[in-house]
Amino acid sequence: MPAAVVEYKGWKEGYRCGYCASERGKVSAGMWAHSMTVQDYQDLIDRGWRRSGKYVYKPIMNQTCCPQYTIRCQALHFQTSKSHKKVLKKMLKFISQGDVVKVASEEEPMDSHIEDAVACDFAYKSESRVSQSELTPLNVDHTERVENEDKDTGEIKEEVNAQQVESGSLQICADKGAPAPGEPSQSAKIVHAPPKPGKGADLSKPPCRKAKDIRKERKLQKLQNQMCTLEGSQHQAGDQVLLLQNSKSKSNQPKTMEDFIFASLPDDARHKLEVRVVRSSPPSSQFKATFQESYQVYKRYQMVIHKDPPDKPTINQFTRFLCDSPLEAENAPNGPECGYGSFHQQYWLDGKIIAVGVIDILPYCVSSVYLYYDPDYSFLSLGVYSALREIAFTRQLHEKAPDLCFYYMGFYIHSCPKMRYKGQYRPSDLLCPETYVWTPIEQCLPLLEHSKYCRFNQDMKAVDEGRIKELGRVKVLHKRTMMPYSVYKKRRKGPSDEASVQQYASLVGQSCSERMLLFRS
Image (cartoon, rainbow, N blue to C red; front, side):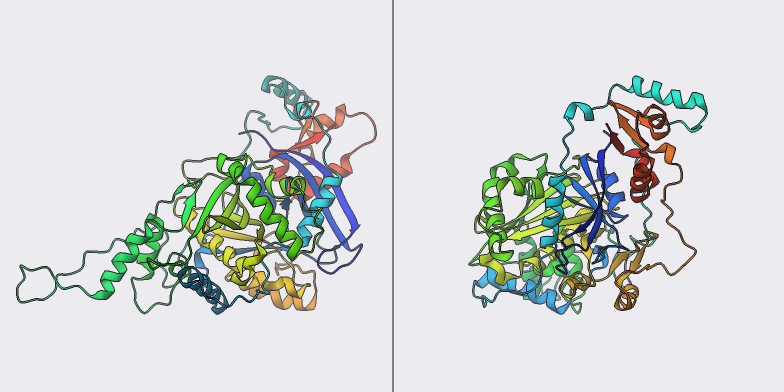
């Protein structure tokens, strides 16, 4: 697996905030990611980082005007609220009957806020000018000789293996995979016994069957040919059938999210909705074939929803902001069939794209990046609907990749009332900005009512367990050679850059700093 290569750009202070309209209140740190493994990015977002294209940034929480707390939803235990069910019913009715009241929704779509564009604008003003050749490490033998140089001096006693990039570990709660009370195990395969024969006088005749059972059987049959397509080919409906069977196992249980999403449609349904997941980086053939249509939806969205002038939503901006990604595509035996990396989840209605959810599939989560949609379909509350579909998608991926069980919704901003909608997806957790442990949002909200910046971890003795402990072990790429910072520091000519490297390492943490290569010219 190739190592991640990043250029740290330092702090950016005093720029415009897209949430409170402060002209100089925003403070964040950023780095340009030329390449990055999905494990590196998973570990970074678990320390409060987030990407916009290839630019990865982290708000400086105790200084920025609107603190942005990383929020995740526990997808396996997610329960739809009344408002969520209302959106699902509206979509189902529209597809089936085509006669819903076309009133534009005021609900915010997941992460389709101008703040991402602001971060993106800053990113590309400081875009990397380093050539690709400078970013390509020399052979391993040369790197090992450089590392041995440091061993000879005795400054670093542990061996640094340049041939491998260690796979990072993320501390997950022990009960992350445990079912909620009354919820069946996610890994259990539910097999229903055939219905018992009817109690007729003549047992040689076929048993009588209830109309309810016949309807259920028809639903399961129709489900095979419905809704989701992955990279242009039909999803295996096994997981969906399992979810439907599971949800119907107790007739008195309320309907689940999947009951609405994968509901059986009448033969004369007015519309057909199909969801396709296509890899955006590197671009798949399906992604390339739909690029122009997807861009036109984005352009209309930016002009109508965010009031951009016609010349602003350019193809170049669209590509850099929503298509480019530093994440390397990865496939693992115990991972999802589509693999890990960056994708576009396209919503096709009657053969045309009406919405696109930009997502990253990571070792432990599906991370929502952005959403854009055709403004003509605002009445369908596509922001909420797409978030619910992404949660359902997370559950689906979990069946094949057991560690993947969270849905990351970006940042929660309590100081901006209209950005609190993400807290409605429960159960969810916020990331403590000091110790980087997850705290249930119910415990965080009272604290945020008193102060926009809060330490959620109430154990005052607790510290950041992933903090930098040995600066000399930070991995550096200098003159195409990988080396620990302790070696680079001796070779460097000119003023010391130790303060900048210390700042970088403290923000990314010890584990990532020893795996990712920090480019030094």
